[in-house]
Length: 245
Image: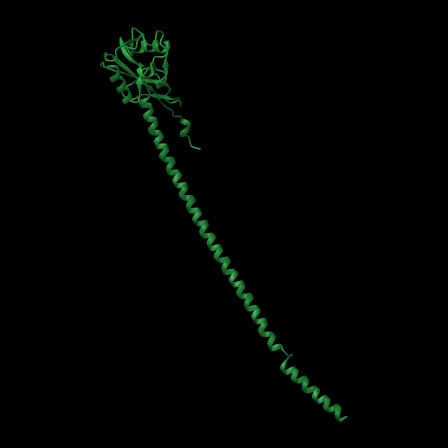
């Protein structure tokens, strides 16, 4: 009986001790749990900060891209205005420079043939310069070459007839001569001329001129008028280029 009372007393005291101090090891568990929460909180805060930084960077990039687009749009607008201004000026130049015979077409978008000052356009694809003085064949050829042209080429009857009607002058040098080093007749564009007679029969008169509307030959030191020929410049402008999209 006494032993039972003693056991009860000890058991009660042990229970009180457990109640007073909690479960064994509980003091060690609480600090571990608190550390995990702190790590999780710090991780969440770090992720949030990174997200904010990323959003800020995207905002900066978007703002910069928007500014770039606006600047490009403004530059394109200015360029368009410059092109429209230049086009208007070209239209004015075209209207003032279009040669006789094409003026009625100046506003419908067709090409307009242009020749340098003091040159003539008589239809076709060539401009012509007719000399007002006489010169040797070499002097005439040199003058034409200085103007990026050649002595006129008369390769067929239609061209001969055209020149006869347009430039009724008695004699003038043309771009045909005998090349001693090549032993043949050549046009100024290096195309071979097949002489109707013997190749050598005119070698002592190696320069050709147009006289009485036939190709004739004479010494190159003889002085005649001369005609230069060069390709016409085609100015192509259409109103469709000026229309806005």
